[in-house]
Length: 346
Image (cartoon, rainbow, N blue to C red):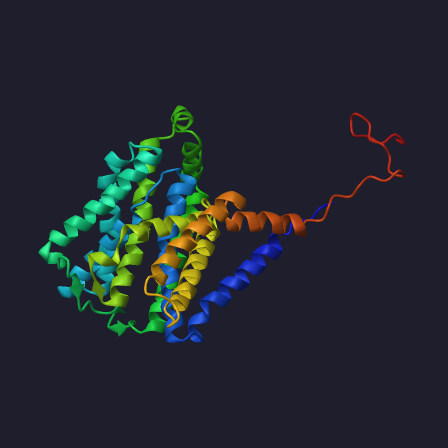
């Protein structure tokens, strides 16, 4: 009789998650910045894996919602609003923008939708540079740090705990959606929209809802990013940022929340290490940009060729296969079953 290894895998995963949550207590300032960046980027990537992995909708413009959340929160707190109100408003504004833009965009499919979301991103950058209230090309400066009920949480360690708290909220929300009736409907429409419509699933409404939810995740992360860095400008949100989010989701494994977390951490740590190595005295000035693009290309090619389902789903399948004992083989002393499953000796 075989015994499933899932309890052991879940115990290991829980221990790893608890260890990760305690890391801010021992990390230095530079490592804390990377730790915060991983958490906030993972919020966006979880939304992408929900949108692309479960609903089958491609988006290369999620940075627009990340920026929208940050700009909304920054404008409010610079005009005297509490940072928590700015965080809520930034999240809702990003979701509302997705609802408005999603009505025409989600009528497209495949690469047409991908190109349209890139165009959305380029238009957003042009518009932001023309709005004086958003600081134009210069941006917004002097954004206050995050605080709740008069308690300042603007230091690196506090922001690290808050950022991973937001990530936990995002993961919990995505997990509940995936395992709900809506999640099953999303998987159905990702397989075939025509078949899903035939089954009575409101395809258009569900696609718009998951697009808004993924935008809300990005907007939520963008609000805390604005409080953390204290400065926002259009140059901080290039198109390559949206592509990087998609690469993170694809490397970790589209359609897997744990894959989104693993992909984000992997890419961020590799880029951090390459950035450190590329800025040494022995490297030319163009080394950081070249190495970044090279590593994205190599990772994508490697994953597409050898791990088409992503790193996490492949690792999980191999670990389950290795830990699961092989079924017992029948011996010559065992009785041969009858056609009805009975015993010949009976």
